[in-house]
Structures are given as C-alpha cells and as structure tokens.
Amino acid sequence: MPTDNDVFNSLVNEPVDDPGVAEALGRLFARLTVAVPSSTDPSGPEGMTPLTTELDGVPHVMVATSSAALESAGKIASFAIETTGAGAIGMIAPGWGIVADTGRASCAFSPQRLAALRAESTPE
Image (cartoon, rainbow, N blue to C red; front, side, top):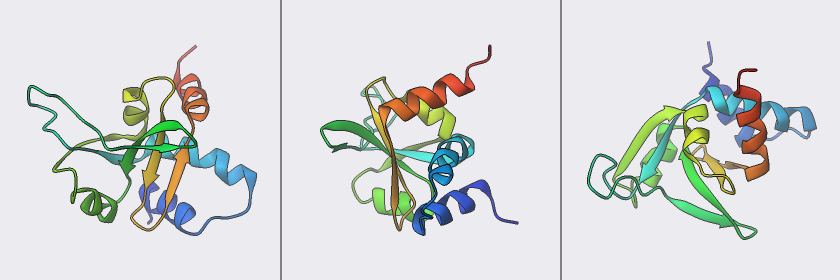
C-alpha cells in the first residue's frame, strides 16, 4: 500500500491539471514525514541553518520528501531534522514559503498557502 509520501511524490512528479489536486497537495504535505536539511548541526551552538531559495523574490525553505531528495541536499547540507510536513510548516516564519523536493520534481507552497494550512490545523 502506498504511503502518503509515495502519493505526494507521485502527484508532484507527474502533475495533474486539476485545481483540486493543488489544494489537496497542501493538506497531504502536512501529513508527510519530511526532512529539513541544514548546513549546520541543529543541536550545536549555531542551531539550524536550513537550505533556502527565493521564488519571485519570496524566501522559501527547502524540504525533502524522499530519500533521493535528502541525498541530493546532503551534498551541501550535512544535517537534517526529520519532522512532519505540519512540523515543518510550524518552523517556517510568516512571509516564508516551502519548496518540497521529491528528488525528481518540486512543489512550492507560498506564504499565503502556509498561512491557510496553519489556520486549517488550528483547533477552534
């Protein structure tokens, strides 16, 4: 039986032209087991230094959703924190997005989408 990570990676690797899929990807991402690569030891005095990029001038943190993506990130980041997608979303400051790397393709979540996902997961 495919895991949530398998389903997410498949949808990102072979995109479907359906607006509902894009919406569902965010909720699915929150349930994934992911790794947030860091160029510094998160348990050391410097703390975590995640890999970042900019998309259209907006800063994004890189997150690996597969072992292939983590292996690739390991070429420039020797450390990583394993967490859930929701945990990664919780680590990201407002105004930042996430780029989820599957190892073959990537999916970006804007700061606005992350804010909506945080709101969806907040109990009333």
